[in-house]
Length: 464
Ligand SMILES: Cc1cc2nc3c(=O)[nH]c(=O)nc-3n(C[C@H](O)[C@H](O)[C@H](O)COP(=O)(O)OP(=O)(O)OC[C@H]3O[C@@H](n4cnc5c(N)ncnc54)[C@H](O)[C@@H]3O)c2cc1C
Image 1: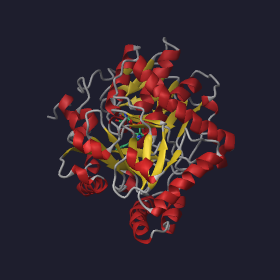
Image 2 (image 1 turned 180 degrees about the horizontal axis):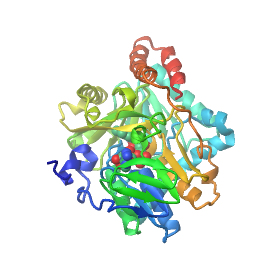
Image 3 (image 1 turned 180 degrees about the vertical axis):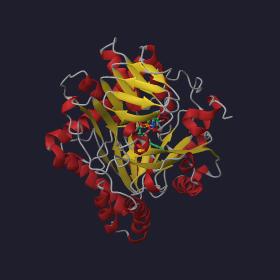
Image 4 (image 1 turned 90 degrees about the vertical axis):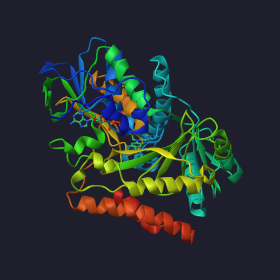
């Protein structure tokens, strides 16, 4: 007989879940059929922020969240902990979609959202190790430096000033991040490093204390107007919200809505002060460099590196399986990259490795929306920028459900519809070719010192 999941079942899922206070044992499951006002599939940050703002705005509202495992089991309990103002669609792309003012409003809303997450965490006594130290992205080749300059120039064209994004000289960049080969970089103050599982688990508690029902171990098998069908009963509701992000393709009728792409991470043991003296990161800014195949890191509150990157393959048919979270080759490459960036690490041990799926829409643009005719709502497709964006999604969905026109409901991502992904095997071929091209382009740029044309072409094909 299969044993019931316990606290120990979920600890190995990520470094963050391993170190979060409180029990991870599943709590209440859906006891049978239920009728509520709002039913939400998925207890990640999207589902929980939506429940939080609804319950805060209208305390009597009956809200049920149905979660397949436990709150924070998905990307929300596994990510890099960058609570950033990054949005997956560029200013230029948002301008093409909705005009220049709308693009600027979207980016400003993201900046405010970072502070809103910090505000709620403080108000709800969620100790998520909040450190708003910004983000430093170092340029480690002439081509990366050129991209950094272009990024700052684009920000200026849209009216974003020095206090939004600064170009760093070599010595300024090195002072923030003591990595090898630094030629310059950029700095933005709009990011906090956090312990993401503390945030999502704390938020689940906060919504429960407001009367929201969060049902663990209650997988949804169908989302339809007026109802969430689960393995334990049907929840009927006026509004039904899909908050399943990278797991969405497994739901009937939604297999081409987003693709799950895996991002993988490692955490080191806590490092001695002598190492941090050479690495820097005082104030805990999050960090990256300018390569195409993204890497990202943070200095954790307990003095470790939590460091991640893309590069794990996309799986045919948008499959999501626990085995896909463990790719030894990617973990080895991440450890090697960390050592190349910071030789002072020496043979510091990696204590945790993990990964998880994030959702990508066909046009690389996240969206949040509600179809008033059917009562069906959704938010997702954040690529790897969902930690803060889920908060904006939650506030926006709450306004849409409560029919409150607001600055948030007028933002360009609201009710944006991305076209479906290609059918297989084209999807598999295209995405994996894209991932390979990015890695190859980084190596080619390192050798030639010129921007990779292939990466630009592939970037356009993928819609990024
Ligand atoms: C390794 C990694 C690193 C990342 N780093 C960052 C970062 O540093 N900064 C950043 O901004 N973003 C980052 N992201 C992305 C970010 O974590 C996500 O965008 C965000 O957490 C999405 O939240 P969500 O609630 O929409 O989805 P999730 O957190 O994935 O939640 C979806 C929930 O739905 C549940 N579920 C799925 N199917 C069903 C079903 N059928 N029935 C019921 N429940 C279901 C899942 O169990 C899960 O709990 C990262 C992602 C990963 C994987």
